[in-house]
Length: 474
Image (cartoon, rainbow, N blue to C red; front, side, top):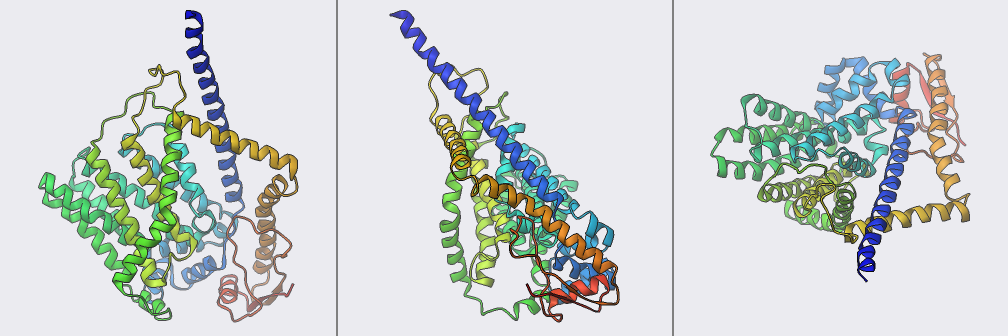
């Protein structure tokens, strides 16, 4: 009787450990495959016609001169313009080392995420990589990673925003003092963020407003307001650019401010509330499957709660800009920073509610609900993959492999066109279109048209010194 009573919990514990091990192994394999897929496509990314526009502007006006021209005539995104013009200025770099664009954005965001997690006393490498995989999964990689113009506007902004939030949380939670050097660094970061896109700048201002007031209420340090002024100045510098008014003059009439604020709130509920709940579940499973090996430095619950609320204000403000100007969430690349904020909010919620356990200290023989749910999801996903391979080989794995290869196919096709353009300076070209039968890859691609006066054709021909270029009909 005693032997049975003793062996039953032992059996359950052995089953639990086996399931945890298999879940960890499966997640690790899937993570490796996902990052390998990212790197593969990164290597075969190609420049777009927008990049050629900025590159030609850099040739014509100089890099800083092009920033000034774009600021006056098109957009207040001065840092994005500088980054694009700097990279696209060199034919050698743009045409042969374009992979450095997504690689630099990828590594920068990894570093920024690590800084943010460390600010919240999270030092687990597994949690960092899991969070990074989640961030990249909702990064809108086609337009925010594999495209120079979109990456400089939204991918770069995502990383800067994360770094700013990391430093601001450390100051807000009194982990570090607000020294003069740190205040200058945060202010400069606010100006850099504003130079990427206006939505990120306004979102950061919305985060800094309540955060500054709370910090002043508790610390009475007046110089914290310099950070708020820096964020405000960045918003004014980017949003009041003459080019913005030129660009917006051709758009539809804007809705009222109150209607836009309410519409943004409704869209957040419709588009991001369910995502937030799912992220909380996923991160809770991740932390349970890979528990901390040492107790984390304690951060007070009020700080976590307040910062989460401030991030919601940032999400609301960033969404408000797009709803006010465009009437909706805008192009998919704008959601890169939205999902970044939602994922960071989910992490803060999990950090607050989930008591991190030290590995080896738990004597509970039963499987925790979060672990059981996570293991079930992993098993179901693995079963689905195997069944898809066995039952529908030409609609699952074969298609996935073909889609992955299409990045290399498009890269080869466009490289031949670039070589032809370089050898045809001063001439007119008629080039074949990318075959419609080919699958479009995850890497970004925008082609010229059959109209030589279309802006995309003009940008391409100006950059390569052609008289004109058109695309042959299919």
